[in-house]
Length: 424
Ligand code: SF4
Figure 1: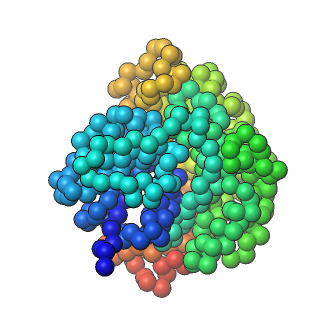
Figure 2 (figure 1 turned 45 degrees about the horizontal axis):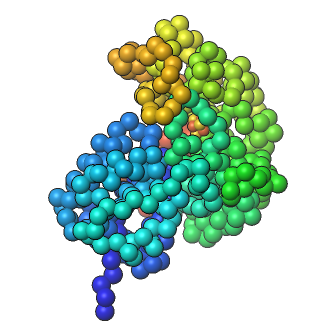
């Protein structure tokens, strides 16, 4: 009998990448592959890369070197955003056998049938304009919370961002398919689904991007709310201009959509927002935040912010700091601006010295820490529902309240993947 081939994955980057890796892994397992951990020996190693992390290139090289030392005869496949953006650079890394761009990622099984070690490195990618179609993905059996991809790509053109070049135009699944996936996940004992996409609020564009389904993100959440078997939903991240009042009001009245929003701001200065080509002003952001807190005073609000964008003066940064300080938010994700090939932001001068970027990052990370502490403090003594994860980390287990406060307790098997009342 022929020996089963084995495959191991490594994922860099965002939740979308994790959900796609999980789906690729299930596809290959259905094709007869045995799944291995990345540190184990495997016949095939797949690295799903990211273009947002600063040192995607370095990380990728290091991982390939590790594989080569451990298992020189194994096949090495690189896919993901970085593979779409820089296929030739990746193909030049010694030890790489196959580079799969955005359109070919989900055809990995077919490619592997034709691949042998020692062949010259194969690149299978096309121009991003030609990428269409939607591949639904979800992570399963890896976390108590499941990331369900419902939208891909982005039609915005923020001047710092390479994601539209790596993932293509905005496309989404149909509501019918998403609801069906939610039901399947519930049958697999999933308690919480995190709706994931590149520009989630833009949900509704068809599989090929251009034509709209007759439905939008608000319609989607209304339908998902009716799926009785799922106990919790979260919206991973939504642009402020797409987070409408009706969505906020709906979440405020829903028992299943958790009181938690993650809303990218990027800068608190209207001048910088306009140079970033964002589609809102800070006033709109403040309005959204205030409606959320009026309807749900206990709601968690997370904010993405970029420091050191070109042209960001000390005054602009102070404006951002003061704005964030004034907002009733729970935590920040702070990113240090870094130059990306083929982006409009490269034309903006003057650039901010790296040391200043790092100082600004530190200041905002401190602010985030204080915001998180204050938010947790506000809820001390309250009993809230915590979904504990099925993971024993040195005798401890972790979970999140409905409003995204992280709780760590000594491990109890009976609480794994269960929702438990917990006094904060
Ligand atoms: S909305 Fe802007 S930052 Fe977000 S993926 Fe689209 S282009 Fe990039």
